[in-house]
Image 1: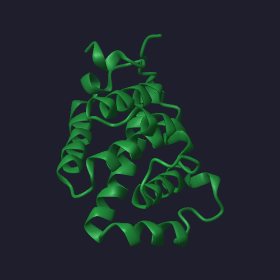
Image 2: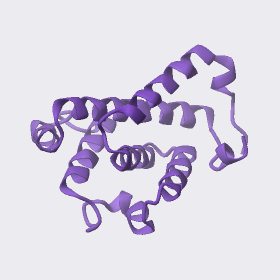
Image 3: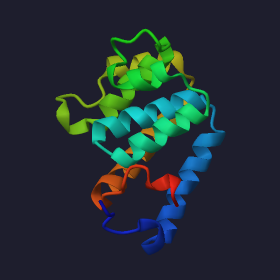
Image 4: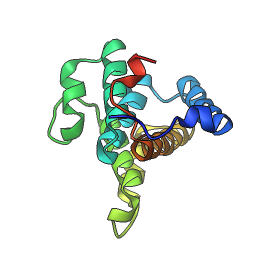
Length: 152
């Protein structure tokens, strides 16, 4: 497989703006493990092999257990996640699949996330979900190759 184009080279200002969002997220009050879990789950939903591969490896390198990484796709049935992480997963799924539901991001899902995260952290979670969805769309559209980030 070969990527269709290199967005970083062809649209560097846009790419740098996306990296600015990543810098914000790394310094936000959103726990790093939650951020990575959300990135992995949205990437699975969106079918972005590049991002699934990258975030799985990033999580492993950060000390995340294999059980948690492997169970992200089946988080509802797995015992490895906190109630707060489950609320983040639910919000991620609803915000990623906007067109798949009659009511996009139902109040119950929002309220559960708001129960676990203060407003500042919840805002960072919303930005994290939007950002990874944008990265996924870039990756899938340009056919980024899984594993290629380790060779760059």
